[in-house]
Length: 518
Image (cartoon, rainbow, N blue to C red; front, side, top):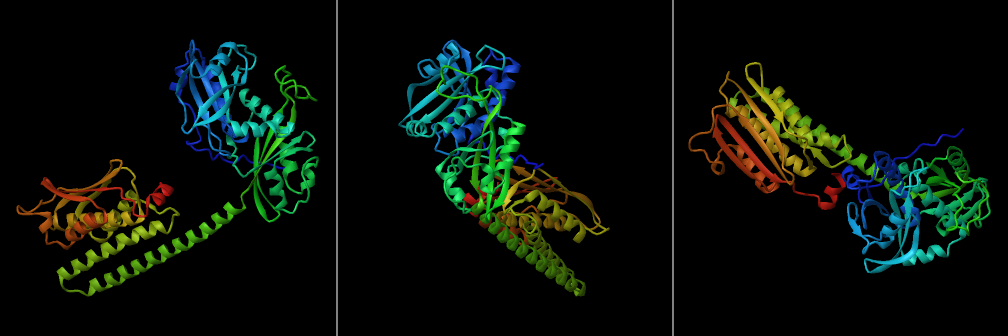
């Protein structure tokens, strides 16, 4: 028996926001069981919005002539009716008469009202929601479509109209098991409707064109899914047998496909939908919707990106190795030096080289070009304990603060600054043989980062001024902070010394690059 896995949903917060408990709490008539049921309906709304090419809204009853939007799903297959999510918005009878009449009267109100959204007329269809076996109306399920799409829908084949109505009604009963795990249905995806025997009764123009890409001749209507030479028949059979929405990826005809199967149950007879013909009892599977997406181009782009990423990571790996080789050669040179001052200068240079090597090491092991500066700081402290603190120096180094992610270029400058400040504290803050500690604290202030390096050493000279410092390390810090990080540096003297670096989260690679990786 073929096994089908449920793929993770790609729905983002921009498409549907699942209501928080406080929105439901405003509807005092709802019991805990009501809320649990409505949240099931809510989780199934995104795919219904996609296939319906409509905004789907869930309204809860507040009081006489007042309602609130509990959930809002916007389609990926067409531009949404509403430019913004309406979660939590309260409406009255003058604003939403259809919704109020649906909640009060408990009857569907479809095609009875014209609204204006974004300057264009839309059609609203509102349906009362009841829990299974209950007569009490607990919410209203609203399908909102622009006029053009509504007219286009009316010209589609009856098989599709019936399937779409079944899909919407099943969502209102929370019967679309597994729908929350389906990936979105896009504008360029195809739709096929087949009956229980897997005979095709409807195929969108897009679906027909997609199958031509794998050299399937002729039309799809009245064909069996098994004749297509793909895995569609097995997928549809499994969805109908399990009465569960399923999704699978497959390769066929040299192309990659993502296909979703949604089983449809017969609806109860209704005078409102008397034009529909029924062959099976209500509640039995009657049809299946297949949603077809050609992912070949996206797969190709992903493959190219993986290759480029692997090449970039290899470059970072080699740069890291080369920097470590240079550091090793300099260590050999240090051993041959008789001048203590010269050895100290070269050791400082080694520390700077290794700080840059740390950044390249992180970049060689991850695809993202943003760096967790806390991880880098931990590595710098480890190197410093190994390189600078021998058995005769009892100095404790500690790190505090949350993870802070910075673009690679900014992280490199920040790592060098941290290295210089730590080296300066260890070398100049304590006499030989003294005991002490150096604390590195990272602070994330939203748009700003603060780096603090404190020690309990000898403190600063009385006439010390940062801008006039003779230390090469502090001059490097000033240059990096002011020129690269666009920040400020402050030195404080108290029980030891504290250096405070403040800089904005500058986006070196452009806002698009930053947003793509955060």
